[in-house]
Length: 374
View 1 (cartoon, rainbow, N blue to C red):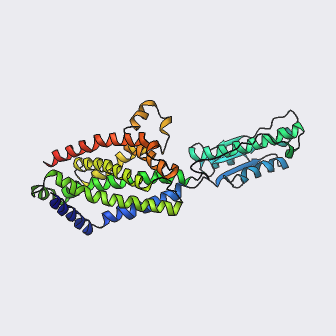
View 2: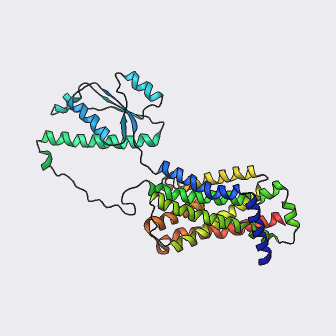
View 3: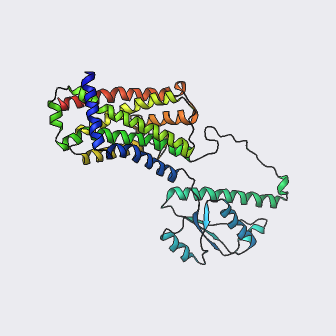
């Protein structure tokens, strides 16, 4: 049996050597895509175009504009002279935010009982930049409000200590965006690589007209499945380690936990995704269909991993559905080992959930594929 499986594995690697673009795409393509996506998403949002209509033209209004610029979130564009200019720029998507300083802004600030109003317009069509802009503007408003309160109470600014929080950040001391986004993108990229490679295992043979020849050869269906699976596991494992090394070197993502534990759990996760890919390979009649099915399954998994939106904020039904997605538990394990240095005493709920899903998916896939091949 081992000899027959070995011959099938050798046959697969010979085929891959002739069809070299597929393993190259899996290895180099996944690595480059992760690098580009990581660079694009790991940086904080800065330089949002901001337009200001300063009707007051006072020292107080210039101080407010300077405070907004000093946040680093905004980049001032040409100032507005009327509301129509702001509206047209917002409609064309040229600005993300606009601040309107009324003519009585400085007068209201100087008044003991006055309340200065600073109207702000945000481009809600782009929700993530709008939320970042809102946070920056709220921070500036709070700072300006504190300064006004200190002045009206007659305190010296350096004698008003106020509240001084003692802050300590765990696991991501610099609050780097990369330490949140890149590990999740690596975990998801591993799923797409293995799913796509496994989904092409039998569809490629079917399109080339060699599947029938393979089935009439003296191999059992189990031997054919193992022979097809071994190259996928090897290339998927190599791809995972290449991406892991790259994110460590390029994005300074730490590995605080056990590398051995991570590799063992990654191997288990590979088997689960491999099983899903094999089912797709049997269902799809062409490589194009296989690719579309992988895209559909991958996007559904992506939505329930907690990367795009926290699972805890989803409706209860969707939270239960997320527990049936292996990638959801894999990302918890992956982040826990990389960033927190966690081990099995902490990660066992996610490991157990992944093991239960694997105990269901792998036998079902094996039975489904064997019945299709017999």
